[in-house]
Length: 173
Image 1 (cartoon, helix red, strand yellow):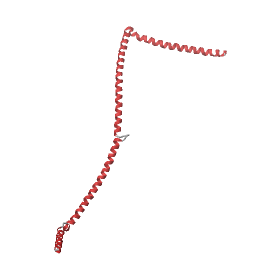
Image 2 (cartoon, rainbow, N blue to C red):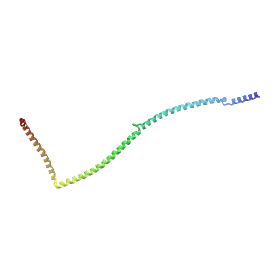
Image 3 (cartoon, rainbow, N blue to C red):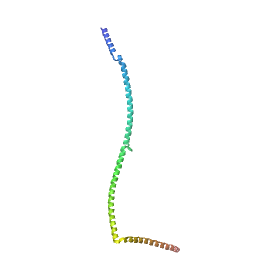
Image 4 (tube, rainbow, N blue to C red):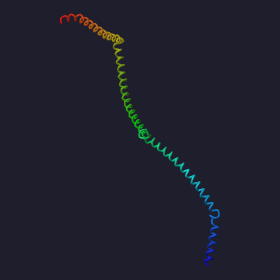
């Protein structure tokens, strides 16, 4: 019986081997599938390398952008801060100019009022003195010139006297 059982067992093993997919072209198919998997794996590795190169480029660009934004001397945030300071300064200057302009408007108003008073006074003087006021002004100017001429003559005479008296005085000393 043992031989029968062994023979039955061997026949069963033979039947299993004959019906096995590996023996009926399955092994070849398995080798083909492994080859296909290796091809796909190669493509994936190539694509992964491409992605890594792009990622490094992107990282480099992100670093440049970060430097452009946050650089302490010439980054965007520094420039924005500078613009804010300039804007504040300009706002203060404009406010000061508005204050000065208001003061100038008051001064101009006062000067216009004073000019009106001068024009009124001039008109009143012309009514009082008539147009002879110009002649009076001319006489005043002539008086000023006459004083200058008088003092020029006095200085010239004193110079001549000093010139003549100097040798005489020098003889005594």
